[in-house]
Image (cartoon, rainbow, N blue to C red; front, top):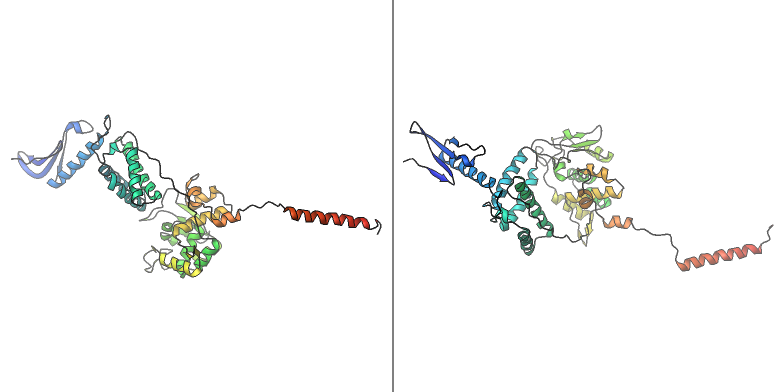
Length: 393
């Protein structure tokens, strides 16, 4: 008896040649489930390969017919299954340098939290009410509003992908959780200089580079000497094997200060990496401990405690310092690797620090009333005194 495996409407069975098993396995796809309306037969070396392909094809068939033309809110496809399909495509985008590995990792981390609550939901039945329930659930777990908003942004991207493929009619949306105003405290230029002075030489150069250029830490970590133009005093942020800039606007040329350029020129080039680790063949990957120690030794404190400074804070500090100097946003955006006209620069990078607000204090040249009276009396007295002297003396 011929062994036949049914996987939905698909069939997997031994391939016969002249009535004799050939040792291979055949997958049969009925004509009503193919794009061109023709029956398809495919051969595989093993039963497992044929069965795996049958399951994949079945899922494609289910996805194609999930919601299109239906008036129900059930598709038979779960959010978990959609995320799996979306992830597969995003991995292909990473391989073709269209998306950063770190960006996909961030999305997947966020979606892990989403799937714990919505994973088994039918993708067509997810509504605004359901998303509000998710917000309540995460707030109840003590998660910060910014974290929850980020998770739903990643889910929104998945639903956008789902709609683009005709699997749902509308992308469910929900109002973001408001973020309460928090005073942003960034190091001043003087504080950054003091901190750099307490760092080991190699780390001092790295922190100076981050503070003066506003580069992302990944851009600095992956900088090679081939990217440095010592003649013109610039560095170039560009793709290289195993790494690509965050966005299409991140690739850019950055001009260096005379001091930073001289600092770079004095470095021994023992590696292809500008900021090499202890092993010269590897780039540096972290310097948190050294930075924290330097902050403490430099006496940079907030609320009586050593200030917590991260590489991203140095990037924001650079943007804020530049804005305080009067650098126009049209110049600042390409310096930071932001798109022209992007709202991100002003909204998330340039901050109203206490230092900036102190410098912006306006004082009108108004004299107090008692001071005005005294000046008036002195003027009057002077006029009377002048009248006592003969005009010709």
